[in-house]
Image 1 (cartoon, rainbow, N blue to C red):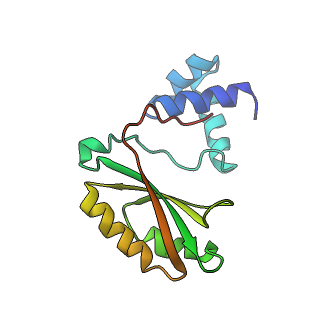
Image 2: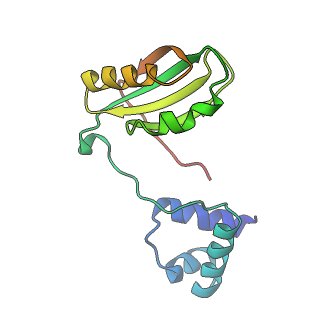
Length: 143
């Protein structure tokens, strides 16, 4: 991957609706050459999907929390059960004070409490520690 690929990725992260002609012009390529490079980045798995960024609070999901999940055993096999909880936005097996780290978004604290109950129903979960976000300074996609 070279600097042009990185610039293309950066531009797509800013606005994935740009035409290939616009992308190419921004990085000094023709539209066709930009299209070919983006196609190759997709084939290699560098670009996994194209999506939109949504204001979660505008959708009513104003509460963001990070949940450290303790497990009595290796929790690496719990991905499907955690993915079935739609409020869980991210799940990571971690090294440190817990087995799994979850990013959860809910409409309120009562809904967060319900999500925590459902997390406890996942096989192997023995405890949780929850940190509620009061304010987000920024979130960024890294290039």
